[in-house]
Length: 427
Image (cartoon, rainbow, N blue to C red):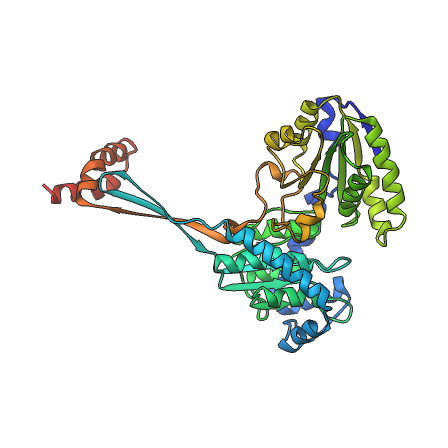
């Protein structure tokens, strides 16, 4: 890991740079695949599945028999763990429901806001080296609570043309309406345009590699919304001498094992803590099954020493981490002062893994600095706010003159007439 001592603010941006490819490196590939799927539908999807996943098969929709087999093969202790996580995620997202907001702005002018579900949503679930069945819970549970009528799930198949049984089980448990064995850019393109097998959706959710991230951003040019531009996983820990070095190292490694392009950072006001964490990382790294992946991510990571909490907080807000762990003598200072983070974990016994799986918060979060302007996925992500108004005769008389004056000042005579006619009818 790279150790940096007392960096000045003018170099923060360069030392905190993410180890990701630029959009330009990827965009051309994404555009070509989108164009092919838009033109040739399932034929193009099948070609790219063969090219990228090295597998080809006839029916890309998961059958009831496949779901039944997945349910039968999954161990009971894993089913129980998934049930516990699902219950906590449901509790937390159910609590986010809001009632109708209604107000009389002027006598006779009633305005209100109500929420409606997005009818058709697409969930992208990464497969590959780590089949993220936990992400199914994070996306399908709030989609169901919101009342989305169509929940389409796409996930890449393995070399035998199957989706991981835990993904199928979680999808079935959470009420997903259609499961498709397609991954990568072609899955996002399929949900954007719709094909014979893949329904077109109104909004696409879910994490993925950099290609999927760029594909989601391109989808927005074709009238499809996305949750956020979420890319490779990242974690920043702030820790002083009150933290447990082994715990801090385990958290850093938990994110590093996601992928070679993941980034983890430790910010500390203690050089001794930095050294202790570095030693622990080496010890724990050696016994990890995904050591090769974690090792590459650790090579891109940083241990940053700063003089005090105030400087640390400024640096962290500049970075805007996806996951932010606080283990200091002064936790409240960071909790109250953090402006830019996807999700915050406080204290020695709050590992980031808890949020990834079972505490109840959502793990689909903004990366790459987007925590400065995006929220993580929540219940409202699956809903739209609609406003309503109803104006009485008294109401239009109360605000009519103001509307007429404003419309005339903007040179919009028809707008003015729509009010004038009504006012005259009441004389």
